[in-house]
Image 1 (cartoon, helix red, strand yellow):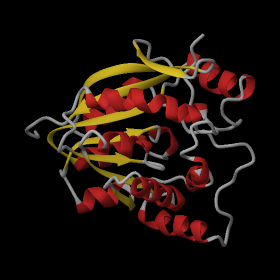
Image 2 (cartoon, rainbow, N blue to C red):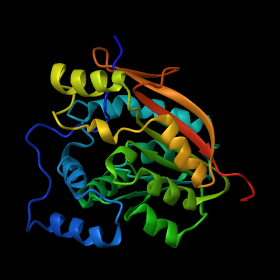
Image 3 (cartoon, rainbow, N blue to C red):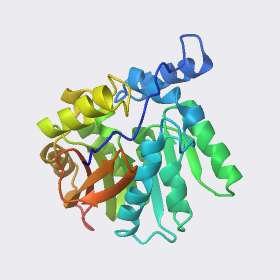
Length: 268
């Protein structure tokens, strides 16, 4: 039995920064500058930062899926010397995988504790990664068309406007660049697999982690990408076996999926 599970586990009983906590203040600061932000979702991830690099902890599924996602990117972009942005980088797992293969990585996130964890872990691994507490819109304004590839994994279903996010990601790409996204399809299979089974039966993720209405069909993601001037290159399923804790690419995209888009070498 294969079940595509959400990579970000919230951790039972964990909460984000309370009102009055410095982290809560920073999150509120960004709310005015980054309209495409759900502060409740952000606070959930903020509360997980201290467990991010524990491969046996509540984020163990992320550690299982990361090699598959990193390999998907590496097979489609020459990483050595490539300028890559990871939007919604969390504590830096994908960033480090790409950096160890020679990429020049910029990782951005709006969770202050996640960025702090990412910076500390990269320093301990002697990796040079440009981590920033910054939104995709702010980075695109500062560095438009600056990146050979952009990664955005498991973020689109957590923002108010996925189409706005895709447009921001497209602005980061140089002509000919690639965008890689992973998210969850909105299907009966994902409802039963990623919500009922993962949250209520197997307890892989806490109840309430996913909102079915926020899940994104591939056609919807592709439509947003076309509106941003991107072309769909490939879709692949991302399957996870919760019993063996192994992940692999597959042909079925009815639950988790990866998408590869490209920006034409010459804009219309």
